[in-house]
Image (cartoon, rainbow over all chains, first blue to last red; front, side, top):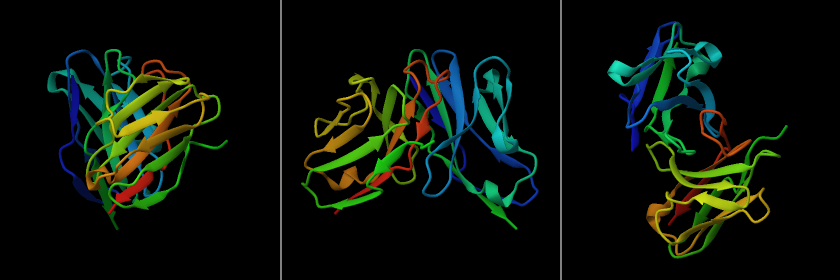
Amino acid sequence: AQSVTQLGSHVSVSEGALVLLRCNYSSSVPPYLFWYVQYPNQGLQLLLKYTSAATLVKGINGFEAEFKKSETSFHLTKPSAHMSDAAEYFCAVSSGSARQLTFGSGTQLTVLP
Amino acid sequence: GAGVSQTPSNKVTEKGKYVELRCDPISGHTALYWYRQSLGQGPEFLIYFQGTGAADDSGLPNDRFFAVRPEGSVSTLKIQRTERGDSAVYLCASSLTGGLAIHNEQFFGPGTRLTVL
């Protein structure tokens, strides 16, 4: 069984401030982890994914995430928020032979001017 | 280069009615997935097709839900005797092959918002 927990359904940051979106996972086998972003009326877009090749993963739009096995976490960060980062962000896990993704409940990011 | 498209974008129906939701995957993608996203929740897996066959339908909530992909491209999600609890955004995704998710990025459509009155 696999699951994902995203702490904080809403996060607000000022433009230029650090973005930190939290994700913790549960998996009985080594997980594959993903972050997706969803803009209004658009499909989910892959930001980055953890493949076990490196614990620090860099994605698009300046986002990165660090896999910490001891903490079962895969938090998403960006050093400096931009207004265009305002969207909903989903953490997801896939493990074992699963083809489908198991998503967290999402975090709505608001960027304040 | 069209992405995944879904029609209709919005569907309003009455309790007890039958609905069909359509998904056009990216051309050449052999794998297709349906997810359901309820308000305030992340997407939940419904069914996965590899080619024409349903490789995994373990996420379908009950036998009112059915999906087909007769020619290995377009897929239709069918819901019989709709209930108010079926109201959600239904998302479709496709990937080039049906291998492990880590190797086969899933590309998502914008979804169909279903409202059951």
